[in-house]
Image (cartoon, rainbow, N blue to C red; front, side, top):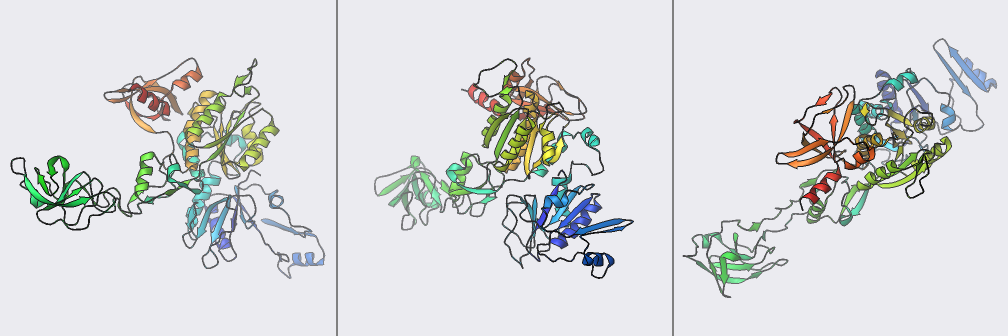
Length: 588
């Protein structure tokens, strides 16, 4: 069924019906048409009102009773078995969405309702639960609402299940003619994807992972005041006049080493030999470095002063207990992992890596390594997509499928079960063998958009199949690549918990003017150079599409409504990994 369905579940008394009644009214006020299903888990339910004529018909033996009036009709019948939900809603039409109360075991997007007085235990299927409403905070990694936040819940349902589908009165031709802007497509992609769950990994394995929560220091580091240099711990006043011509002499009390603590107190006229990282002895105010002091085993001779605090790393200088070190959504790098170790962490909560299935379609496409027959070509799009996903730490599975509807349908149904997202490559346009979107429509996916006003890549599609994101990319290499970089990659990064999805952006000066079409967003390939004023973007246009893609180091976006960006202008550019590698090599 192509009508989106949501099931609302929770324990008895949690407030499902109360919430649904308010939600129905809110969505109707926003102009949507709805159907609802109420599941009653016990037999013997009396649907009709005792004593009414229709009730008497049923009592007399009528197996199906239909009640008709000028403005509504109702029907009920006796059953010898409980109907499956699919059978119940099979005849529903003319609505934008079906809201279902109950059926907690159904493989449908699930909204859970929780009331603390009943139980905090969740009852719905975790893999289909997309949000929860409760009267107390819950430890869940999905959107959470207050039981009375009907507008917020309606906003989520509208953006995730209703935006971009068109109202039920729109014809399919009208929907096809509506092509989203790039900005709208990007926003809807972000709105419909929720980050995956959380797992805990050892700190050494956290490189490239995305922090699932804000992380605060668990300890002070250093835990005490320590010396930053080898030298002598002193009282500042004792050496204030010290110089080469007028050295200060102090009595040596002992040695303080890192990892231990010197027992005693630095008093007037005394000093303690101290090594880097050693705790500052009691009474000492500064450390005079070894280059300005010597000792003969009993007397320290100092030829320079040291103000209070000199060469001392105070407790908590690196990190302070409770200090926020990073925000959820941050990609962890080596130095950040080192900081977390100093802050008391040995493991960290990260968002799970997306498991991505990449399905390339086409009778003409074959796997690299096989003999190339006339009329065939190697699956370069597939390999490029796998490489990008691998670059960003995603687990990928790749396969080739011929343009056979049953094969494509089976592959989609199989892969969605054990992956978090699907990318299809090819078959996204309107040709006789462009089957992917049509098959997804038949399978009942929730299509968010198909075709976007971008060039290259306008045939891109996106939706949710069994609650999981599916990106349909066109087959032409430039279109395939750009649709992936601009919409699929940010969506997958969002799934992986990124706080700022998309390619990194820097400012660059245009070496040449670039142009596009006013009525869509144009993306231009280019190479980067480094000048004394910063980065310079050089557009590239080669006869070979694949060679041009291989040479590109950055992308300039000409936004919709603008036809040209003139040479010499500073403009944002999306930077690819290739430039970073080439720039490092050129500096050697």
